[in-house]
Amino acid sequence: MLQNPASKYQPFVPVRLTDRTWPDAVVSKPPVWCSVDLRDGNQALIEPMDIERKIRMFEQLVKIGFKEIEVGFPSASQIEFDFMRKLIEEKRIPDDVTVQVLTQAREHLIRRTFEALEGVPRAIVHLYNATAPVMRRVVLGMSEDEIVELARTNAQLFKEIAAEHPNTDWTFEYSPEMYSDTEVEFSKRVIDAVTDVWQPTPQKKCIINLPTTVEHSSPNIFADMVEWTHRNLQRRDCIVLSVHPHNDRGTGTATAEMALLAGADRLEGCLFGNGERTGNLDIVNVALNMYINGVSPGLDFSDIDGIRATVEYCNQLPVHPRHPYVGELVYTSFSGSHQDAIKKAFAARKDGDIWEMPYLPIDPKDLGRSYEAVIRVNSQSGKGGISYLLEAEYGLQLPRRLQIEFSQVVQHEMDTLGTEFTAADLWRIFRKEFSMDISQVPQYRMAEENGVVTMNAKLNWDGQERVLEGQGNGAIDAFVQALSQSLGRSVRVMNYAEHAVGEGANAQAVAYVEVRVDDGQTMFGVGMDANIVSASIRAIMSGLRRAAARQTVAA
Ligand SMILES: CC(=O)SCCNC(=O)CCNC(=O)[C@H](O)C(C)(C)COP(=O)(O)OP(=O)(O)OC[C@H]1O[C@@H](n2cnc3c(N)ncnc32)[C@H](O)[C@@H]1OP(=O)(O)O
Ligand SMILES: CC(C)C(=O)C(=O)O
Ligand SMILES: [Mg+2]
Image 1: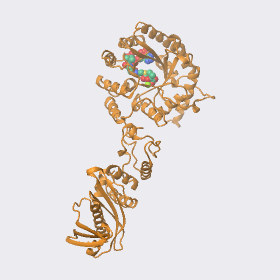
Image 2: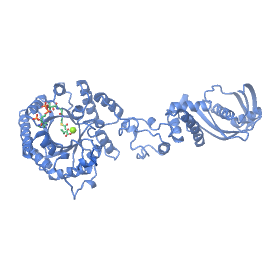
Image 3: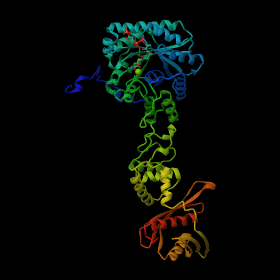
Image 4: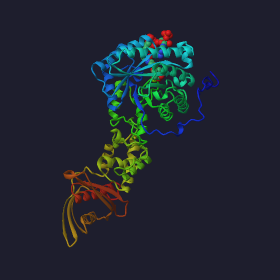
């Protein structure tokens, strides 16, 4: 074994700009987006897409708003060829969408590619050959001059075949494959040779695409390369400068973002970062990063879960639950302090406010996600999360001390079960703890005279039916007096709160009371009823039952 395995590797730094400008640049508009899901994404699948899946993916990409879509490598196989033909013959390409296809710099493949494109109204034809030293030496076995000649000859072939089909609006694209591992001067030499053949103009530009075919160096190194290329290419005003990042180091997103700062106009990538090895650039990630910086990306991800379902179906690969913006868990907080902060920020938020939400960089609603999954409760959670879920799902606005009291009940259950609790679980525990399923409200009658309320009630307590009577300055006071006399105990209401839940005919009142029996511990009781007095009486009984259960009152 090598003493230091890292000595096997060396950094590749083809250029170090000392007058770089990209760190001070700001991106204020979206790039031209090009999806390569149906080509680079597809070629990396365990099972490449069949025609039905390709159509589903194509339609999804159109729906998102991509105007340039690389739909395949038509010379690679019959299915790739047939798919291209199907899109053309069935007129499935919308007027504002341009399809793109890839081919190696080999004559028979180029001819087959143009054959697949017969009759297409407009298309981007994408030529590539590798330029990096290892590819020149080991794979292609060509000198630098031969590589330039390979690119030039095949660029010429593109031009000639395209001229034979004047009814199609052709755009040419060239990629020096492994640009990120190629000396910048050599990439420039090859690219200049290609554009010398194509002679693009500012009105009819060609696309020059700079790939990190394999990501070896950090995004700042790539940004220096892009800025150098951007400044030094001939015919720059006639070129759409594109980048095509992969994600081997896990920095594809940063690479793309810095490349835009460095002068790139266009990005190629895939939805949720599918693609060779660790994937292509995740276009959704870059687009939504722009969005949360106040720049509209011009792509529609308002149904991100629907898009994920399509992508998972077509690629037959799952999207990770922690994947940026789309993962199942990315709008969820389990930890108590995060939940507390989110709950407070939601409460403080008014319609039209700037989005300023701790722990949530984007409003889940903008992506068609709901707040329901934002807070989930497990043993790492606190009162904030528990009361948030009960409020969000069941409309309960628990007083602060009740939040604390109930979170201890939940914590106790949690310690026993150790699982996550849903809002429905919490509601079940809440109803049980506060005896809310004891359906019978005590029968009672009230009368008022000169501000004094007299309450007569009949209830079951301790297995016996009791008839009570009491007087007070209101219904609650009268009921508590009646109870105290009947039970021979001092029952006091220390605090009281109420609110409505629901609207119209289904509206219910919910009452929270803090009761103290004799000089025991105060206990919350909760009652819900269509009638506010009944809700309050239920709440008092609920508190009493809890106190009894803790033997504050003899059972
Ligand atoms: C970075 C990328 O993603 S590039 C896109 C890669 N995508 C794919 O390869 C998917 C589709 N490809 C295929 O189906 C096949 O590779 C085909 C049909 C294109 C070609 O198949 P084949 O001709 O059987 O073989 P293969 O791909 O192995 O080609 C290798 C030959 O092409 C040469 N070659 C490879 N790339 C290029 C290129 N861009 N330009 C010119 N020659 C090339 C190789 O040096 C090799 O030459 P050799 O046979 O003289 O040694
Ligand atoms: C063919 C090119 C653009 C490519 O996919 C790559 O280099 O990653
Ligand atoms: Mg690629």
